[in-house]
Image: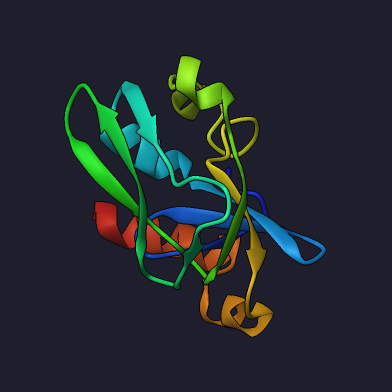
Length: 128
């Protein structure tokens, strides 16, 4: 269920590297917990954000929740599609519905994140 080329956080964000840049989004587990997502707010291009820092907000019919940076970096692109189609986060959280792309400031920080296998174990432990 969780792509093996991604890294994952305990806050249910994912990151996929592509050279020196990376896409960041939320996991299948996170979107299920939120329910129908109706609004997405992410930072503008050019903003630098540290690992662990809040970088956006997701609003669903159930709640409003923050999303956090898995690693530090500078925002180089926002997924404009989510402005008009926030429901994509429910339909394709690991694909078309990425939130932002960043220029990663320290690739070694990825070593502290979970693999798909470890993340699946973590999710299972939270559901017991």
